[in-house]
Amino acid sequence: MELQRRRHLVPGILAGAWLLIVGWQVEEHLHVVEAARADLRNRSHEIASTLSAVIRASRFRGAVFQERLEPVLNELVHSRTNALVKTGGLLAIGLLNTDGDPVVSDGDTNLLSRELTSESERWSASMVTFVLPVEGVSVNPEGVSTNATVVLPSFHNFTNNGSRGRDFSRREARPGETNFFEPARANFPAPPTNASGEMDLPPPPDEGRRPPEGGDRSRAGGRRPPWMRWMNETEFKALITKRELHGLVLVLSTDNLRAVGTNDWWLRFIIGFFAGVSALGAGLAWRNIGRTADLQIRLVRASEQNSHLKELNLAAAGLAHETRNPLNLIRGQAQMISRLPEASPAVREKSRTIVDETDKVTAQLTEFINYSRPREVRRTKVAITSACQEIVRTLAYDIGEKKLRVEVVGEPLAIEADEQLLRQVLFNLLLNAIQAAGENGKIEIVVQRGPASGVLEIRDDGPGVPPERRQEVFKPYFTTHQKGTGLGLAVVQQIVLAHGWEIACLANEPRGAVFRLTHLKIAA
Image: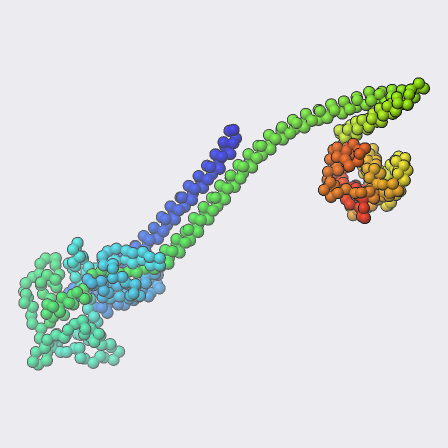
């Protein structure tokens, strides 16, 4: 009972250990994926810090020219040597206004979502979108920017030389220079002009008043920057709404994240697989140990039973041997009674019946003793052809009674065998063939030399043995003859196995049976 409990307990422990390892690997995989996500977040913050530094360096009077930001964005998106993005896969970047429209952007602008207007992130199968603050974008809890930065279009056509009355928008571009004012005309309305055609920029009404401490002059009612003085309030508000920075949107590829996750998943899978194989192997080893223990117990019991059977066998053989003496006495007395002069024919007939039955019992006891006798092989050099001829002469009376033709053919061959046991084998096989053959039949004893050993065949032309019974004929007490004891072929198989030979019952063509002995060791 204790062994049975252990058999179920150990596999359960191994399965639980494997499940713990699998759960541990799943948890570690989730940690690796989360670390890869954190790496993407860190890269987005690094990009935001870099862009903030650029805005701080380029900002003047609350404004940054677009031409200063575009090369930086282009470098961040398209450069393959930038350490900030070469592994992050920056797909798109954009600086948004208060309406969520991109003021300056690069990459695939279709990926810039209008729904993300506050600091947040959104993950999908192939990319992740981050919304982050940048320099000049300080948003209060009500969502209003308190430190504005306006992005102006390119003003290559302007020079700060104090000539405020010239119309620089109509100046011809120098060789190799692009007129960037034309694209900006939609964002900046034309300033008012006086009678002489010069720009009329009146001083701001609040000139001389200082803005509140810590505020931006453009949003606190202080002096507007020079580039805003010729705008009225409506135009100024429209410009601020359209060009004021309100947030930074980054769209990063998650290819590296998926690659890291896939590689780590395969690693965890391999660990779990080998852990399962180890648990399975340990379970099989434990089962084999249990089976080995069972086999050892069975072997001990079988050994005890075998010893008991040997004792019974010896007792039965002794009993059979001792039984033959009274039978011989009964046989002698029956013969004596049948020879008395005054014995009637009926008494003589009964006496002969007693003698016949006594002979049958004696033959069976003799066969039983031969079968139960230990087979100790004492090998000598035996001429097998001569031994076959002697057995034929021994059974000459039985052969002549059925008018059989017995031939011993083949080359003279000497083998290593126990001569007495070999003669017993030949006697039993030839007697079995004589009983199977009909009158005027034919029996052949063939001796052959094989490639490495000798072969002996005893062939008869009797009815043969059906294929389904060719293995059963060597079992004890199996016989197809009325007068057979069923132990002759069983004794033959015992002697054959003791010598290391092999015996087989085959079909003889066109009819009959063949008993073939193989692996006969040829004597030197």
